[in-house]
Length: 264
Image (cartoon, rainbow, N blue to C red; front, side, top):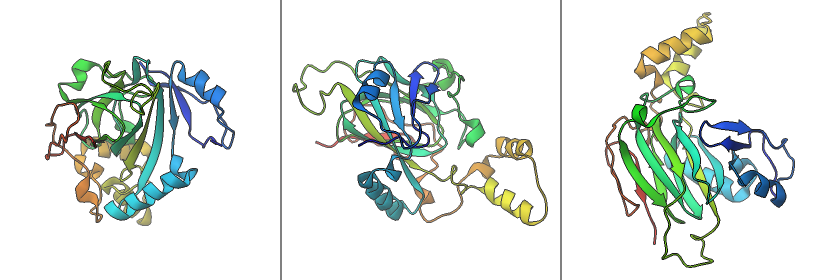
């Protein structure tokens, strides 16, 4: 049985990231509800590892490997949908694992280097244009077994994959649905950044800056948005706007840009 979590939602409008709260926490997500929602949208199951033991095992292994907080979201999209997620940025470094079906990715550079929560773009009605996003650094179609790394703040979107006549009918890659895991390395969202350290120090000193004051500081000073020197922090926080392009065979930028790889 698939149970809804606290922050599960349907991405109803793939052009503007408008979401719909379809489920209450703990309610059953039935096949009929999934089919109805996926007819025109993308289902997002946030923090899915809190409900699925198999995903929790991945989170636990990931946290041990990189020594950073790790989270998993599940994205399910009906393959014929022309656009599943619009151009947007995230405040996490993310690793995407394609599990079922295929999905086409376009990745651009960072609109804001190492964005804080209030600097995320392309969500809640905020539109990011192709011109604003700049040149594409990577364009690739992910198939089952493919892995894609998107650095924190890099603009990206997902689209319907191109037709592939070589796919075997009934195979996992030929599925009518795309299912992928987004593994987030949660340095900023868990408070492991210099602005949160500064905020703690100020409170201990008896100071209480407003949210607006903190946001103004983090917006002006990039250093405050950087992750603290935790053991695994050297793996995240890519700043370069350079990357590689291709369709998925062991692509790697090596300089902080996006990279993808496919398993055979």
